[in-house]
Length: 358
Ligand code: NAP
Image 1 (cartoon, protein in one colour):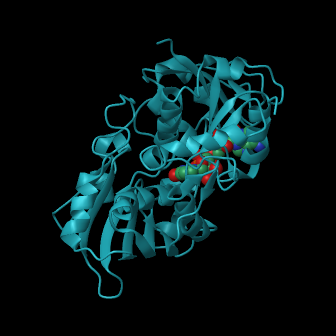
Image 2 (tube, protein in one colour):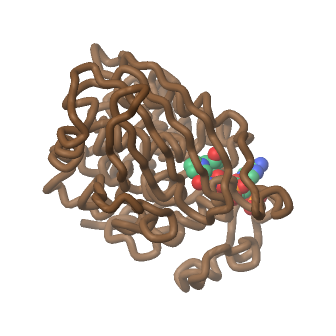
């Protein structure tokens, strides 16, 4: 298969750097364009980026010139790690110009015609693309704390149904981008507020777990209550979750459902798909961000401490890598699914920049 040429919008940010890292040796996609703000445009990548990893910048992109985020850049499709303040308009412009836009930003997530996608959870929701009235299209992945929660809930929803969910997060610093939270605010401290986060965590899961009916998503019926906290951890969002079930089940049965989940990606050969999709720990000390965030190259979601809850039915701990599974890795897996479904090819971007016929 000929590799597709990927552009990265927001290539200098925390998520953009994860895209660069994960795409540097990707078997299906080549990085052909790095784009960011006017502050970075015209500079070579290593001059424009404040590289925050302990690994070196990949040689293949180090000297590449950063361009501004305007349609016309030479690639088949774009990943977006853009700041949400500007992502909405820029992503719409690219979709109108015929590009497939695989986005991390929140701006288009809840639009009725835009898939909010986790390939193992709702691969059929990509059909929403057909309702987008542009020659390109936008596909989004969820908020970084939504991803872990929904990956852990999906097997339980399928087996028993879920009625109410109470979730408290302990979110890593990398989730705030760069420079993010001031060191004086977070060192030796916890900040019990992340603007807009609780709303996303209470609404996005209902779309992700919803049913595709007559070309639209009917949201899943459940009630969620979220409390979001920033903690002095580098990578990996941890969540303590309590939930009530629609059909009674023991903690052992819930663990059985998590371990027995029939992953719809099994056997498809998508390069970024992890195996297992969800790892369940028996050791009550696990999962922990430093030890387990990178499981499955950052794509496996970890679950532990599944036990009875004295208030609701079941409680557990969930951990996921926020800039990999919760951002760049999730978006790359979305693109791989779209290739597999025949919705993303080198012709997508080459299509004329005109409206669809109807
Ligand atoms: P970030 O580190 O602040 O990076 C923002 C990127 O946007 C930079 O490349 C920046 O380029 C670019 N940008 C800013 N203003 C621009 C403009 N006017 N025109 C073009 N480009 C512009 O943010 P981040 O943490 O990577 O997050 C990126 C997006 O992903 C956000 O929408 C965020 O909500 C979402 N997200 C983040 C995470 C996470 O864990 N960090 C997880 C899921 C989703 P310059 O360097 O040139 O300014």
